[in-house]
Image (cartoon, rainbow, N blue to C red):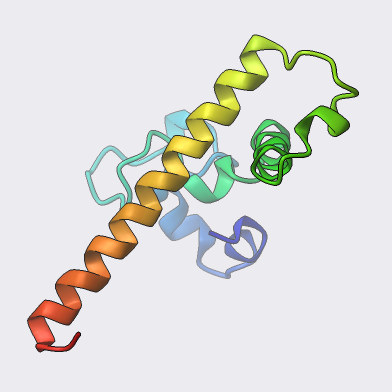
Length: 112
């Protein structure tokens, strides 16, 4: 999900419409159903957005018990708190899927 290197690929214009690249106008996106992800817009583009970066930063501070210091003991705005909760939930879903996939892989190969 490295948007910068993706955009620098010589064939970016050929696959970007299929990936629903956020750097392209949405009317140029392919509707052919060949997109390799299920999102409305390429996740590589989304994770580059300042709001997502700031949400990830807030989540890290929260996970380390230091969020109050970051926000000077002020209440976190409701929108920011909701974003942190959504990102935390998404991270937990990915972690659970990785654990499940590793367990299934071990079971398939008969290892512990």
